[in-house]
Image (cartoon, rainbow, N blue to C red):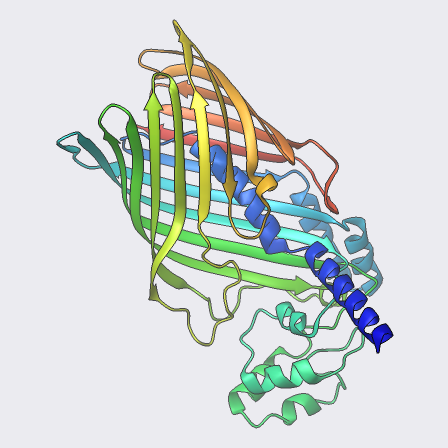
Length: 417
């Protein structure tokens, strides 16, 4: 009996260790996206009419997409497996955002001054991770970008599969679909046969996550008295996301990575709040971003459940500004935290040096920043009504855990008047 308990304890520890170390493409996206959000925070908007366009991309993403596309056209399992093995333990990231802002009248009450803005933002991001990962029964459903009715889900999860089998037609005789009594489930099963295959445990799979957010609302900067400042934003947000696990068999059969037939759009009311303190040339603030207040419209019940969730982003940031004539130096440090990654993943520090004239409408700035995974170099050019900033996040180590890191390049262009 004691031996049995010992074996059970060892097995439990092993399973927990495997679970904790397992790659999660969504959590990896959160880490990278929040690092890019930190760069956005370091180039704040003013009380202006503005158009801001930003884009970021991993340097290898175009090559990976091309190789996978070629493998799907080649039609051989061996070529698809070779491509996945070539990019094993890598990830590729894409990020695009657009913000439009319109200032409205400022007002003061006692020591409080508020500068409201109406802003709309569209933010798209995606992450592709390739690796060998243990498949649990519930993970089978992640291979599908369709709604799985309850009856069909039960059968899929209770069936024992072998590598290469069609998940919706494992015997190649239509028996699984024919056994369904729900006509909706039977129709979905029949229409989707030949698209989703059980993976080979010895070959990496591709994990794909993509998210699209649209925000519109009132964004308010404020100061209170001599020392306090911050913002309070209240906005509606529409979110949709996609999560799918794609294996070599699916690639070799030419299965397209296509949008789900039913988008899982959800509409929520969100808020951001920042409270800061300034004294002389020193500032510090704490903030919470993307705090969900209320769900205004639920996703279509026939759509696939969202993966990303609504955990808010927490931040602490401090900096100091030193000026001599037109020159400036601004050291800073801080951290950000969201569920899905550890505290140390969000710690950062750096400094910006610049030269500005004409009320800071003309100038150059060079910013350097260091965190656990990357060193970031960001030159910025400001020309009266225009601002252009380039950023390169270069890995400070070859891997983070078992993820092979590579450089991320981004560009931000802004017009303000």
